[in-house]
Length: 341
Image (cartoon, rainbow, N blue to C red; front, side):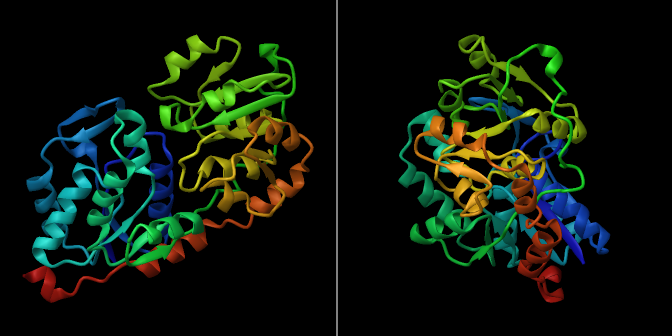
């Protein structure tokens, strides 16, 4: 099968959408798929307002149409709702081509945090974007239920996975040379306003707070919290080493749809502390591999006593092969007559 994927988030961006889509693509290629990705690197771009690290394509419509027609895909998946996603959607509708979409991020909440625009207005726009989709892939049961309540149709539950060959338990002394006191409470992910990092960094916890990641809020937070240690990882191997340093993984986000970083932490045997909201509820559930509490400080302290082996065992139940099976089953086959129209 020839599969075309249109996405506004792609390498070298270090975020969950890129990791999920990239991993599924690699799995599909092993199954014999021929895949073309339309991404920002193929266009002139400008920095996303308030999020300069995210490049947005400038007027991608004409070139997107040409790339779709020349590739003549058997199926089209639109991964994001940005300029490229909208250009691909418009062309599919004009040509009568079926396509699938995915709801990776709570974009309305992110925009609300940056602009103050009402979330209800933003969700109406998102609902219109996804309405023509053959299958709207929702990454967790809680997200599926929320979207359903907001009038989204054609929803399909699509789980996410973790590479348990890369993220494995290991030595905890990788950053001990920094001389920070234990225990280590660690966060890994994008350092942006919507991740609610002050919700973690303001906590009264023993030991040290470690933040691993990049993003537009990083410099501001480094100045505001000089006692916290801010680090970055060059690759997945170093990322796994940093996860393993943690005694507890603290995830303060209130808006994530799935929280892939929680699965990676669990795969390294590091228990999770988080709020009982969308994302953590679906990843942790009633597994006892983490602590979900409205009091994040209490959750973080409680997580220190959770058995690392239990965390690893829970992460192992999230298979990328199953994720890829689901994705493949949701695709809408384009008929030859539609491609020739």
